[in-house]
Structures are given as C-alpha cells and as structure tokens.
Length: 306
Ligand code: SF4
Ligand code: SF4
Image (cartoon, rainbow, N blue to C red; front, side):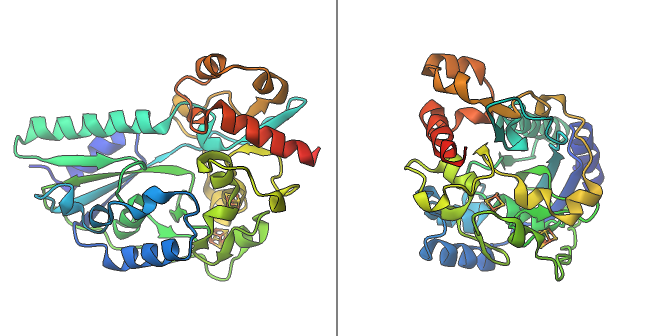
C-alpha cells in the first residue's frame, strides 16, 4: 500500500526535507487571485501564466484519475556570499549550482517509479516549477508552509530557501492541515526590496522585480530602475535574505549539486564570451536561461551603477 509513511520516508531518502498531502480539489480561490494578478498586468512579459488555466485550476485535467497532490520541498540554501571578486556581479543562490529542474525532476521520476514498483495501479504526473501546476498553492494546501508577504512559501521550522515539486497521483492519503500565516506585523521584505516590487503584502509586480527583469524579461530593463539593482546580475535574494524565518532557521543544504561556484559573474569574462563559450561554462546551470544576450544586457544595465 502507498501510505503517507511510505511516501514521506521515500521522499526523505531522495533528499526532500518536507512532504505534505492535499486532496486534488479545484484551486478556485487561488486561480481567481491569479486572474486578478494577470489582469492587473503583474505577470509582466510572462504571457505563459495566462495559458492552461484549466490545468492550473484543476489537476484532474492533467491526470483524470487524480485523487491527491503530494507537495515536496528541497532545501537549496548554499550559504552566504563569499567576498566578491573584483569587477563581478551577484547571482541568486538558487543558481550557484546545477539546475534544480533536472535534479528534482530525476528524483520525482524515481519516486514515481518506486511507487509503481510497489503498486502497479499507481498513476502520477509531476511538476517542478515549469508546467501549468500551481506548486506554491499546493505547498500551502499540503501544509508545507504559508505564503509569505514576499510570495514565497515559508516553513516555520526551516524558512523559505527551498525548491518545490508537486506530484499528482491517484491514491488517497491522510491530508495535512494548512499552516497559519506567521508573517504577522513584519514588513522586512517589503521594506528591503530595492525596486518596490512587493506593491502590497502578498502581491508582487513582476515587472518591478529584479528576478523577473534579469531572467525572464526579454526586453530592455526600464531606466527607472538604474542604480537600484544592488549589483544583482541574475535574480535577487534580498526579500528572502531579510526574512526573519530564514535568518533564524536557514541551514546549508546537504545537496552538493546546489553548492556550485557561480556566486558571481565576471564582467570582463562575460562581455568577451561568445554563445558557445557561455553554454560550455554554464552547462547544467540556471544561468543559461536568459541566454548570453540577456546576461550581457544585465551587466551593461548594472554598469550604470558603477
Ligand atoms: S526578488 Fe528582489 S526585487 Fe524581487 S521582490 Fe524580492 S527583493 Fe524585490
Ligand atoms: S520578511 Fe516578514 S513579511 Fe516578509 S515574508 Fe518574511 S516574515 Fe513575512
């Protein structure tokens, strides 16, 4: 039998720190909030957020036999930044090592295969951030944590430096209780955001967020943000760095693949690279996402800060 205990032990063995279970119900309230967010234009250039709404709202469109959703979280915190080399710019911690989509995708596939080996009637699909599945909403429903005012999920014992994965399956479990919001009166993330991207508690305008502007954004970075990027060339960690839950509970990940050496980008090296050299240097790295052109755009935007 595929029980809660079996899944929790298996996920722990595969390197996940947190496991939660939720019934595969429609995400009606969450997709309403998503619709409002998109109609306000806060998804910026991420047009894909408005596609596949049927799947986002109801995982049974992805897996008609779905009964439960398993939410998994894996700590990626690689530690604090070392002293910066000369003429270098910062990379978000999640991209210091190898691409989590591959690492966690492999673990989810292994988990599903082991479950199928134990029970041939087990059916499941998984998502790691990139498909039309609301990983954060499922993490909240499955009791992994609460949605912080910076819109990342926070766990009361470990903070928010974790990647999420979602496994949708056809088995029933005992379901986890949702976790109460413990942000309280804190506004540290809102106050610290250098571009005022957290426009209200729990509301992020992606078009103002350094993470979006340096990674997903395909256009020029608007001049209004000049001098505000705090030397971030790929992503931004500030709202998580200042969160008291991370300051208190963050622990270094045991997953060596997340502890790579891409803490900084060397301006001279990046600016003199061609695409082939870029792909070779950053093989398996999330830094590839905006392509060399995007990274060079970011560096040239940061030059205005020097
Ligand atoms: S990632 Fe950076 S820019 Fe985006 S909301 Fe957080 S602090 Fe602001
Ligand atoms: S910094 Fe404060 S308000 Fe922001 S997510 Fe953390 S606890 Fe919540």
